[in-house]
Image (cartoon, rainbow, N blue to C red):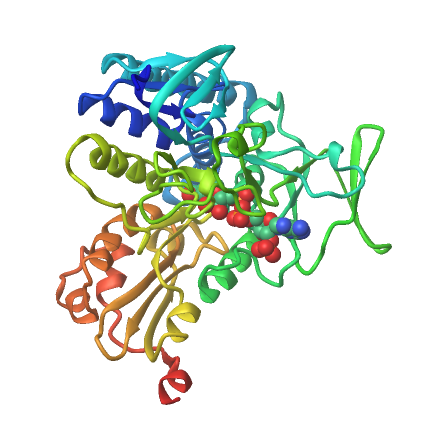
Length: 458
Ligand code: NDP
């Protein structure tokens, strides 16, 4: 049967655009449908606008600290509208680039919603389109908790349309988005409460990092409310009140639900195409990202695996090479470096101490120090933490973790070493760059502790 396209990609975000573009470069006849905005979450309501706002918050702190270095700076306050305009212009520019990239390689673009009619046929904005292969890259969406008054809470998308800084903010949750929002809003001048159900923020991260981050957030005046599960939100006049049980109340101008995201599979017609989903609505895929239909693939946040842009683009590229480039390959989900753009930020790659210790004995190296800049600025709560988790048997570095300024930039390079299987001795024989914080990663000579021994002895 002759199909309209060799490949149809549903979703013009990071994963979909890369897969479509590379497939077209390999000679495939490709189409992409995007119903909302080209570039997806990352470019429009995620990584990009968030990072610009993180930068804005940092400037305030740097400007204050500059006085300790002799600069005569007076801060006249922050202009939210000016920041929003600059941010939105950059987002518009990048979104346009995504569209142009596709046009440049002859990909047919549909500004429309696509839904399955059957396993090879889609309804694309009212038009019937057929394709030999189909990629589902529809991403995810922010969700609200199912509690009374949830409609009074905002979701992460809403940060980027606010007309002014809310003076008092409650952030619900303690994952990536919650903590990044809390820090950037505090940095821009808001009073911030973070309410979360665990005892420490950032479940799944290394415990030393989680503890050090909590300390740093408190030092910058963020109120942490651990072990609290919100049960209700009420609007009273212009205020919102979050409560948990009968005794916990917080009043604010804005409440953000940062309590997780869901895969965008509703109404896609997956049943008509015979594509299986998990109970949580994620598309089920095998190691090649094929769904229960071998010619339909899925990638990015819609499979809810490692929900990070660079992971999604790597998978999209690998699939395009495999299907149309005669270069079958897979992107690895192991040792994915990641950063949380808190203040200070976190950079991490590989296993936490807790995860590594479950596999066997590990040598743990931890260093806590005040970066040179803050020995001068005297700013509280800016201590950096660096940590290496090393397999005792092979001496391979299994995990590297940092809380501290520039950690995201530093961890990209450390990530290469960890992916290559570098040992602690490889780190040790690397000469440091002095004076930097990063040199600490190659000068941690004294083991802090051993973990995971009990398991090894079993
Ligand atoms: P996360 O999964 O990181 O965090 C969700 C938070 O919501 C957790 O604190 C979780 O608590 C809490 N939560 C979930 N359900 C409930 C509930 N029923 N009641 C109370 N609390 C609840 O999701 P995010 O939405 O923050 O981020 C989504 C993903 O996007 C991230 O995992 C990451 O992959 C990606 N991302 C990456 C960024 C980056 O690279 N810098 C930035 C932003 C997002 P608990 O831990 O107790 O389960």
